[in-house]
Length: 208
Image 1 (cartoon, helix red, strand yellow):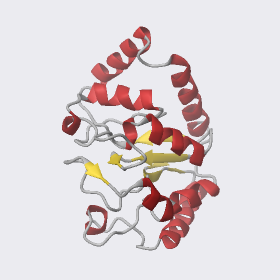
Image 2 (image 1 turned 120 degrees about the vertical axis):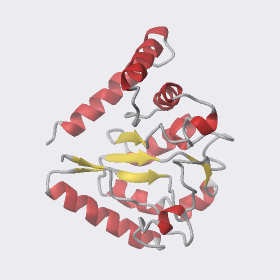
Image 3 (image 1 turned 60 degrees about the vertical axis):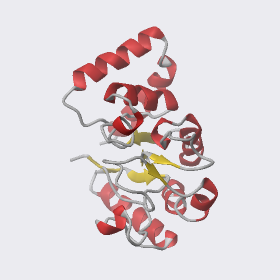
Image 4 (image 1 turned 30 degrees about the horizontal axis):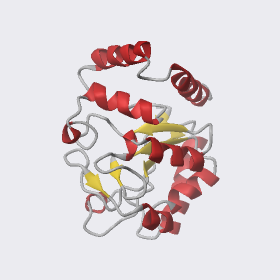
C-alpha cells in the first residue's frame, strides 16, 4: 500500500453522516487540523502518501453516496471547516480529495465542488500548484445520478473543472476511459491541462 485515502479533515457535526460513522477527529477545527497533520506525517514516515479529505468539509453534509448535499456558505466554511485543510496545506499536504458538496459562494446551484471550476480554482490557490486534486468517487449519486449525469459525463465534468485525478468506482472503466479520450480529441477537454495533471500525479507517485 503506497497511498491512503485518509486522513479525514472534516469536522464532527453532531448528528451528521460523518459524526454518526465516527469518522471525524473532533468538533474543534484546530484539533482536527493537528490530528490531520500528525496522521499525515505518520503515513509519510511509513512510505504511504496521505490524501486529506473531503475538501471543503463534509462535516455538515448528508451521505453523498445517496443524495446531493449542501453545506454552509463559503463565508462560514472559511471560519471553521476549511481550517484543518489550511493547516494540512501549510504542512505540505501533497494530495487532497474533494467532496461532492454544494456551498453558496463556492459553487453554482446544484453543482458539486468536484465539478465546479470556481471551487477547484480556489482549492488550487489554497493547496498550491503541485498538490494533486483527487475527486471522491464520481459513481456516487451526488456527482452523477442525482444530477442526471452518467459516470462518464461526471468524470469529464470534473476533469474540465480542474481535477487532476477523477476517481470512479465502476464496472465500466474502459467505457469511461474511451469517453475521456473522445472528449480530448474533440476539444471538450483541454489536453494541456490534462498533461499538467498527469505530471503532478507522476511526480507524486514516483516518490515511493
